[in-house]
Amino acid sequence: MSDNRFLGKVNPVEASKIINRETDGDPIFTVQDICETTHPLAQMLRYFLAIKRVTKNMLKRMHRKLAIETCMSTNKTSFDFSNMYRSISQHEATWQSTEKVLHVMGEELIDLVYVLRNNETGEISEIRRSDAIKAISEHPYPSNLLMERVDKINENNNL
Image (cartoon, rainbow, N blue to C red):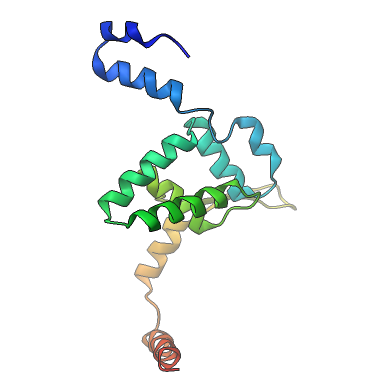
């Protein structure tokens, strides 16, 4: 650890960045950690955390800040962080854990793209979630389908 007495000659914001960088520890994931799993969503999440050089302490601070903003209890905050951290440490990731980490880090997933290659022709195509959302808004669900779904939910709640 470096000698912090010289940090007085640096502006306070830069000094705090230097001190925090020293005490934050190592990044949760490095680029090499990506190849430890073959699960595509886990690879993407690891890659995101690796390029952002996110450490456990950084993630914990961001989580705590969000917990305070949402009035989460102290016990629930600790439990929630432990669950989130355990879920990203697994070799598989879920949409829920991915969205949680992105939310904690102040990021928002605005689109998802599948890039597909036809095995016969070699043609490359893309399918975007935003296109699916647009199609749904242009052709809403039939009202009877929605009513059947609502009835089923009500039926389950009455059990």
